[in-house]
Image (cartoon, rainbow, N blue to C red; front, side):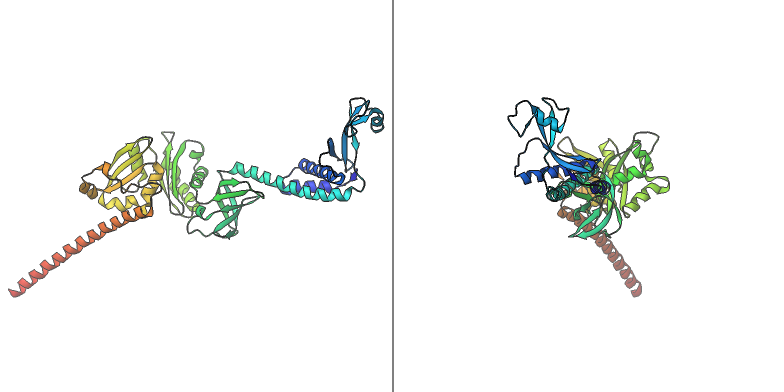
Length: 414
């Protein structure tokens, strides 16, 4: 037996306090290390019935071999005679198992080196497993962290027992991430690696908005008000569709709060990101009208509504076209993501020129993966309409000036 003393127990307490690794796990790792060292010393990889046992009262650890008590010994590695067994344990009988101390002499130094290596390895494995289990439970939820640094456009955020990575695509455009600042992030994914698990977090995920509304609006947490859908372009604008399960509770009013207190808290948390609270409806026409707010809608015609396609043709007043589409197509793009409907928007004058043939016109339909070229075409069309209107105004002004000048000349001649 080898005397260890109090050092082992102090080490176990440190592991449990700092890394959350239990005392039993550390002792089991130490015993495995002693068995490994013993096999190396006797130069045998497969040694049956060998184990390391720690006496916690005396603080001693040793290598023991279990043998079966038999009358005639045929395999000395596994069996022991009754007379030899009684020298170890006076109460031993036939067919009993006895543990024999086989700890080699001068085994302490070799065992200590092996124990150090195994304990270090097992400690890392146990820590990795604890972190993996913890963050697997946090996957898909909000957590608070502290910004550590920025590396290769990735933001490193400490979220407890490990540092998480926030890729550039999960950051809010234009946001400055200052080291030392606290930040609320959404745990996107947890990947197991040879070292600590790699945790991927997001500051731009739509679920952050959901979590914030659940924290600020008691009716949502209680299930009275339900969030049906969220579409977000982080840093710019978010649309959220809500409905009430209680006819006496206004879903939009509950989210706004008294004098806008609830929505202002959420907007402040999102660094003044614009939020449109949309009233959900089972009626697709009403839902699309609400989703396109604040633009006024003249009419909505359903072109297709089945499991393969959902398309709607929307007509707006001429002065509302740019508002309905939004800057760079943002408003209609968010409405599409919110409702799941492809939305083709035309002004009243455009619809009249086309003689309204819905089935043949889909060029302004906004899909989730709408390209920048499509948006540019829509924006260019709006600019052309504005320029045309300005040209008409200039032309009218010129004609009026010409008439005034002719009248002045006539008056002079007279």
